[in-house]
Length: 402
View 1 (spheres, one colour):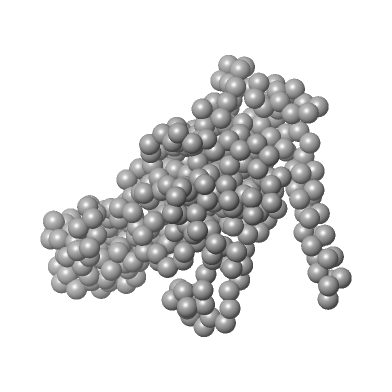
View 2: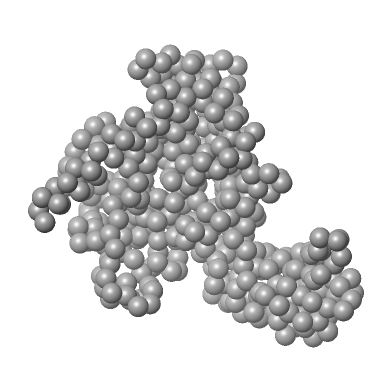
């Protein structure tokens, strides 16, 4: 990402009206692009576009489209669109991003965008079938590549085959699973890898004399990971009525709680996904796939673990690290059809899927920091319920109108 000359630090952002915030985002986008925000006032999606997305449409269901300020990700100033109905998530992300600026913001890296297609193979002699697949790997990769030449043209395509033996509870081999690793470039990749899996069926059955079962991607995208880090001066964590050292110690203690107890880790990770999902919804991505992959990844060690952890480095620096799968795309699907999804990408200046993955991870980490900071001090409910009161006022007003 290129370093931006614009600052995303916008004090008092939450006190502006939606109209004023919209004008400021228009200014952020620059000449000729600000009019894209006009569609948001009508829900951002036409019935015609909705019918291109899904079946049996009878209307459009609206959710708030917010913009969180203050983010710096890999040295780049960012305004981050978030779509979510839960109060306090956007405010928490923006506040934690403000704190992260004291440490230079979030540093995030993403691995190559590699997705996995699983192909299930039954055979009388599984070991012999394994050998035949491994000996014919080059041919099978060529077959897979031929099924999606568009992906090849953009620099992607199949990379390798891995063969796994799946055993039952008694340790007996039941079937083989082939993992076809595919670089999907800037797509989420589901359609491409599924097509490649389908293309392999007749060739696999011929060379192994076996029978192919399921062939579909896995949402445990553990070859497509993001790692986010932030280092904060302890002094930046002070709150009213709480000294900085007390706050940082509380954050580390809460992190340790999540490391030791899966019940706590589940809610810890849910808070991370509040931020991640809101960015993915705003950009038209499959947040359900990322959710599934994140929680499976958290359990890979045999017990459910936190995706983000925090520790003190000496006594003056709080360090956090988040690591999780992030299968996102900026081409295909709703990102192409939904005008608000394109607008969200424009606001962030995203040109590559890995850039979006890094931003989503940073927002998830920000929400985790905000949640632990609140839990370690005044409790999560004080700020959360204050924002809930606005919803109650809206319900009361609507009843008066009725």
